[in-house]
Length: 65
Image (tube, rainbow, N blue to C red):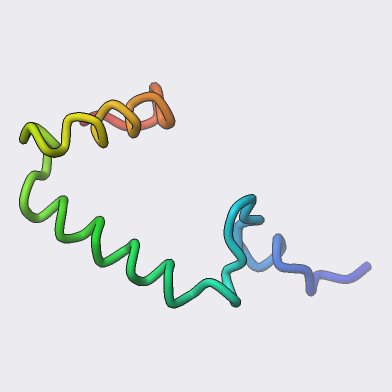
């Protein structure tokens, strides 16, 4: 039995990104998300309403906004 696969180490299996190849774009996305949340934590501003609705749809019943 071997325990060296990525799943055993807690690295998620990405469907649209490769953790190792796409790290630069993932960091950009992370920084953008941090800026949005610092500016509008509850996503109440008009410019963030679509984002809030997409997050609610994607994570329905998993998080509260």
